[in-house]
Amino acid sequence: MLQSIWDDVKREFSYGNMVTRIIIVNVAVYVVVNIVWIIARISNQWTTPEWYNSFMQFFMMSSDWMHNLTHPWVLITSMFLHEGFWHILWNMLFMYWFGRIVGDFIGNQRILPIYLLGGILGGIVYFLSVNLLPYGGAGTHYALGASAAVMAIVVAAGAIAPDYVMRLLFLGDVKLKYIVAVLVFIDLIGMAGDINTGGHFAHLGGAAFGWVFVLQLRNGNDWSAPVNKLLETISNSFKNLFSGRRGGRPKVVYRNPNRNRGQASKQRGEAASDNKDYQERLDGILDKIKKSGYDSLSKEEKEFLFNASKK
Image 1 (cartoon, rainbow, N blue to C red):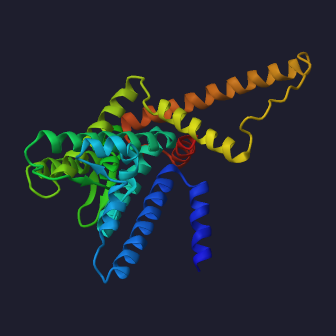
Image 2 (cartoon, rainbow, N blue to C red):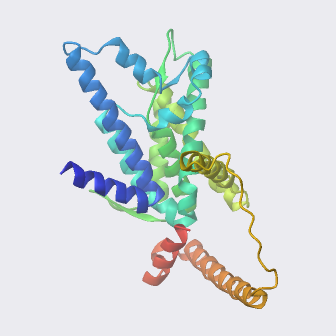
């Protein structure tokens, strides 16, 4: 059974979209954390030992600037870290519901940058709010969870398609803009409370990023491009490292520059024509969504948009 589950997870991670991959990583980290917690509790007479807290804090965002300076990875690791079941459940459900909308409308390649940058800004807002506002009190505070990153995805979805309709249990069809407004308002109320105050500030930081990201994208500034380029560079570096190609000499191959020149020119012309037709059809579908909403699309248009989001 375990082998079957593992095979399913590997297949979904390899062939699924970015929303699926982010959810898999979060759930995998959650499982590992709770296995460590079980071992820690049982080995310490059913009380949580101090080493477990130190283990968790090693990956968590802190209100202590020295901790964050000496543990710079916490800006990333904290947004993949959960302990409570309900915490990760709601975060991943929101990620699944709203992430699919973002991916369908502006492309699968923009999901991870929004998630990462929204989570990073949320962590920074958390740090500043705890240190600059009086609610923090004495002592060092720590933060974990994907909520700020997920709120960036949620608000981005609302900014992209405010009139997109979602069917909610007991309420029926509700436009996306109202759902997002309620979620943001809950965090606004939470800022004035004394339960997870820093977390609510972080959520709003992520929400603000999601809004600004879409605003900049409409103005022609794609903030996801440099992030994807950086991630690709890191990925290629690791591939080269483990494939043993580091330090290898490049091979020099001679090719006749006149060989198949005419055929190559013809292929380039055909490819340019196909790309132009493809882009014109995509622009037409996006204009139709803007004027009449996503539900006005035909089945073929929805399928075309979904396939385009994967490129």
